[in-house]
Image (cartoon, rainbow, N blue to C red; front, side, top):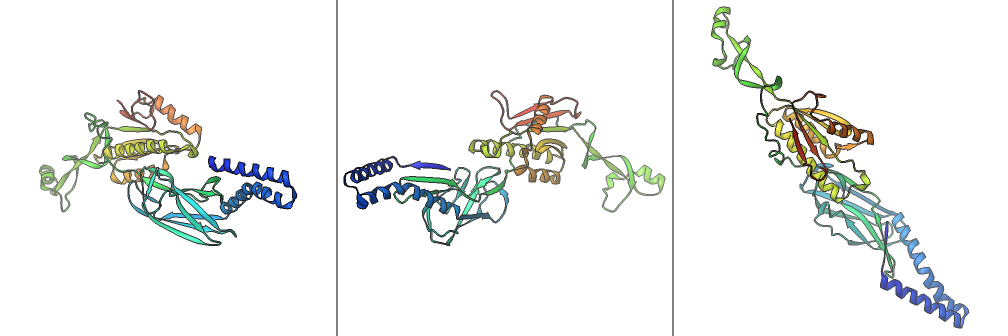
Amino acid sequence: MSIQVNKVRIIIYFIVISACLVFASFYGGPVSYAPLYGALLILPVSAAYIFLNFRFLRVYQEIEVHRFPKGEDHRFRAVIENAGFLPIHKMRLYTHRDRCDLYEIENGQILSLNIREKKELISGISCKYAGSYDIGLSNAAFTDPFSIFTVVVKIPYNFRAVVSPRITDIADSYLDLENMVNSTGLKSNWMTEETPGSDLRPYQRGDALNSVNWKVSAKLSELTVRIPDKMEKRTVTILMEAANVPDNCQELEFLKKRDYFLEFIVSAAWHFAKQGVPVHLIYPSGKVSESEVESYENFMEFYNTVADGIFYHSEEEYNKIRSLVMNRGSSWYDNNTWILIREDPEPGESHCTVCD
């Protein structure tokens, strides 16, 4: 809550109080004291009126979908209700304009409500950043009848959206590693070599003729084909060092960094997934979590997690990630290549570091 005071009007108010006090001092009696008491009661009565207005204010916000991609337009609906016994005059509604665009609702829009009245606001909306954060209406402002002071309070009900990052190629330039796909003993579960291998099985309808082993087929008197070997891949581990920022401190600067971080890690995972290169992902999802991404299906499971699933339950989990960062590239996971992606790098550090 914040209170804004109109300096000119508060000076005029104190001048009026002083004049009423002088008048009452010289003349006395009920007639002279009535204006003085009336002037003195303006501020406390106005404050009580505003308190009751806010106490009985009801706000409901929604979008037709809870999770949606960054930059995609959707329909936003807000219902504002006065559930009290006093009318609400010229209340101003403020929006989260720093993180979302509301096309039909102005920031600072004035709204008045009679007793038990309910109004509905409809607008298109799009979100500017990936992540999980409050959008829509943010604050309501109430002003006393003489515009001496204004009280700005948070909307009673906030709407928290889950905004998925875009799938781009921003990580490709960082991850264009030489010989990333080479023979190191780890085999793919679904990709095979182009040439047939040495393993055999009976011929099945649809098998290519060049895969038939004619010598073995003649010996066994049965058509036999060679099975392609599983493609060997180099192992890659991506370690994601997310910032440890409490929910109540996640302001615009944090949202911008989180947006770039999420888009980068999704791009990095997709860079390898589209090649069929198996990737071991280590990231904070409440606790330190691990995933394997080798195919489109694995990638989509990870993608659906990152928008609202990158966070720490405790300082202990953050320290675990920090420990992994300090010991990256060791034989702890026995992988060949470590890729460290930082959300908030220190001066001189890169967002992405490759450690062979």
